[in-house]
Image (cartoon, rainbow, N blue to C red):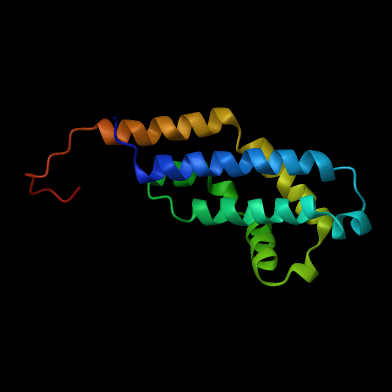
Amino acid sequence: MSYVSKDECLLRKIKKHVNLLQKGYSKIKSLNTKQLEDSLEAYACVQCVTNIYGLYGQLENDDVIEKLSFINSKHVRKLRNIGAHDYDSINWEIAKEVSEKLIKQISDTVLKECISIVRDECNEIKDYTSLDDT
């Protein structure tokens, strides 16, 4: 059994929520605002965005945080905050735009690169005897 870092676990969860977001988005992308208000899939998409944002906030590897920094964009943050605290105020067109952008930006390729970064970090030999703080 091999060691799986916290960041790798978080990245796997992000991938799971992106996959769910993709499934939900495929069902809502052609709906109008009224239809979106009545759609469980639309609310599920907002919840996936909220979960992705929360998982991103727990990442510790600076390189991965930087690579996925678009998750911390203004529109994602706003949708997350409204989705978590005031569902009745969701702008559904923005919710669809944010969902589509996250699906495109958090590709399997990007996630594989991020997982590779955290695995490489875990494989580095640490020198805890050094007096240097860097």
